[in-house]
Image (cartoon, rainbow, N blue to C red; front, side, top):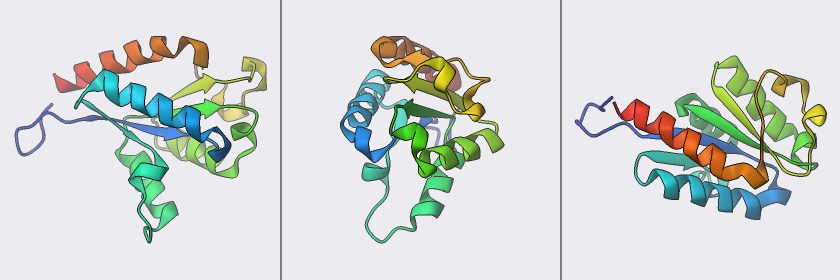
Length: 140
């Protein structure tokens, strides 16, 4: 699928996480964008929200424009009001939600995540293969 300018449309991933897991989130986003080289853009608050931007509106816009939401579920994030709100927005907008588990068992997932297959952080390469396949399919 091409944009109005004839360039291919990027596959957009919104990355949701607790600020306590910032380093891991940065590494995951770097891997996602590296695997997708120009066909995948990953929204990460610290790189996509500038000083003075309205945070809630920018996050909502990021989720609306995304093809899927990846949520790093950790002991910190499963207690985060922002992470839960972002998952709820993605769910309401019928976006694909991919839970990545880090020191959290599947039985500990918040109720909104029950319908989604989770991937262990140690198996992140599996997610990269899957998202790249979806991004290429969107490219046409």
